[in-house]
Image (cartoon, rainbow, N blue to C red; front, side, top):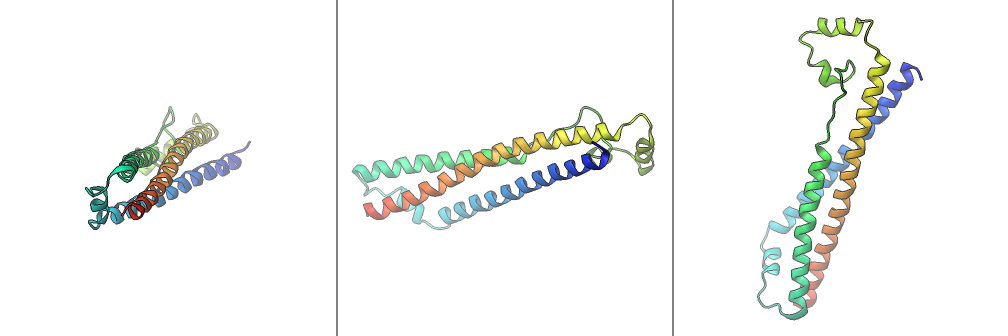
Length: 167
């Protein structure tokens, strides 16, 4: 593989990470919307604390509340875990902006780029591997967050139905 092929692969890997970050933004918006709907008024809190509920309605509502809490915690933790993954190559990189920014001046960076001992190919391969590792971690946690948000919404709908049936 030549340098152009490696740059293309790195570009695709970087774009994949951006796509996962966009999905995380959507999940964040959904969680914020659910929280705003639940806690903007007293309806949810009143339904959750309704002392008139007895029997199966009380048990079902309690189960739903436990599942809502669990799904909320899991989705929030998974979302945060999906936002966090970062890694570095074992040596300073000449193509990663974080490493480039560590050079004190542009001249020092230009000098490092011109160094015959530094192999751009090895640097690109390292960046491809690191970016792909970040993508894999973000994707795993994004899937966990997506599933838990879907469960959260499903349990909220179930809770609403139980409240209507039990009223």
